[in-house]
Image (cartoon, rainbow, N blue to C red):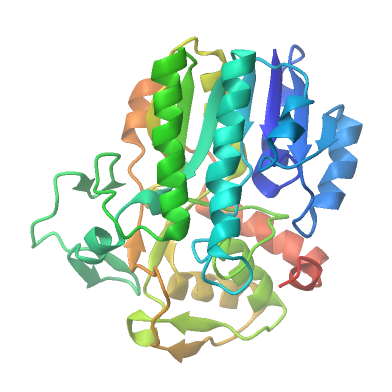
Length: 353
């Protein structure tokens, strides 16, 4: 089986390539990356040593995909990954749309021409910000959690947000590009008979991630705490009660491996760490204080675009469809990141943060 991974030199793409190559002798990986991200050059070196056939190119350029060899599957891991993309002063709204939507269109055209299946890595941020903000919350153990004494939408449970939850705007400019990509991928699947799996991922986290405060928050927080960089609890009273769940990319690779070999037409699935792998910023700070020593974040209750108090995904549909569930615990993820942070105290600077 030959697989094309776009964004192969990124954090997620490189983990997927390594896992698939080390797990199967019959897999060949073709990798495409524009090498724009700080740190991607380092990943390129060891990916080449693993035998990945690397191409320097950009999914925004259709001609860059036209020169690639034919493959059986495409894993689309190339994207502007920050929810603030298009509004952060680092990327424009046009750049965001070109990366995350035009890039998907070019990948889909490659799949149509090559008769290749597609695994599209999407995001939990396709879910409606307004609907998430309206969920009844209470504070328990320094973390927001669902208030069981009030009614919830049907697509929410104690396990988290399900795939049927509202995707009504606003979802952020970033979320809109990913939601549009999902819809196009489903249309291509129906029109041209190619298998398409869509994985809506929560926060991905692990050692070596190019983390920032807008994405990769677990990695960013640990690296910043360990080097005593200023940290802030932004919004929601400045208490740090906001909650996210975390997923290690090796766990993502396990379900991708199943999808590549299933022979099924594909589904749309939440693929996330879930309630057991969730934590608030305040709880994360407490963990870091024990690991690295005390370092108090600044309380800042100013609002930031697209922020939400709580987002945990329910991946029970993935469990039912593929028997998949995360195997790497949040504590294991944090330990892995912290060990990397200690070995590389310059990491955030090197990544351009």
